[in-house]
Length: 425
Image (spheres, one colour):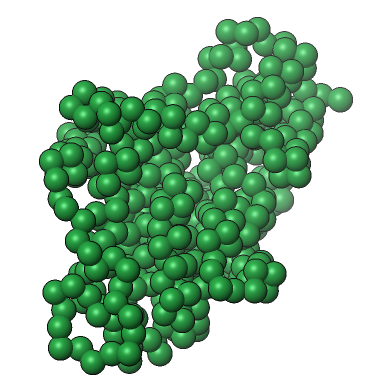
């Protein structure tokens, strides 16, 4: 058996073990990189470590470190409370507040599960208290997180754009961001109508500073104002500096974020002391391990082998559709961003033919592999399920499962039609 086939079988085993045994996929990938690289590929240790994504490691650590500080000093709580007050107590706008808040959090650097972990308990609490569909509120949180998840300074956006650049593919960070935002915004609008969001317009809450509304509802739990103190003001300034520095001055998002985080830690060491332990180390291990394994696959020729096999389908558009469905189906049960690290390099030889626009293909793969995170088997879907209140949990699980299956069946096809067929890029 060739080294390429062995490496593919090991990749399948990695995904299977990570899914069924709850083992971090990154740890499995590092072990696979070592075993495949040395035993099948003839690589030495230096050859294996050459594929370690140091730039992406800094992005992951830097932005999650900064976000952990923002959470510790109450900046994220202030942002959520301020956003709720802005809607003036209108229940129909609450789901959209959750969409916007989670999208903003991921857009400025929070990893998607972290944003969902913060907002999902609030959103599902609103759903239970004010009789809003928990599926609607949970889906708005997840799709909001994915809508902002591919901004140029986000974790997922930085990872995908880094992979694209490392593989010398023509990409567009702006198109990638707008593609994910547009698709998630569209499906959120459909859900809002289908799951009864329009019926909420007749209901209103009582909030601080909003008077004269006749209502039978209880006040919003966030009506009390969270003080905007010095640490929050400086943290907000740091987040703005991160956005401006990376978008306007083309600074590295990881190094910029970690610098802002260090400055905040120096100024308020007591508040920031626990932030290092809250860096999403499992995600760091996951991403770095998968990308290191993919680098080994590339070094021993597996990427070209699989890419050439896809092109033998004979119809480039059909091959592109198959890749989108592979991303959607596998991602519903495994790490979306980890899968992206494997899918994009696999598409390189396929894209080299020039018959499919790379910008549209990357956008379609990103959308297909992330919008399915509403599945209860994904981290985000599991967070929604775990935080649902006053529901039949088995019934709600089945609702999430059915909705996740619909997304897997429909989204890759729609992404293919919208981004691949027009031949963008």
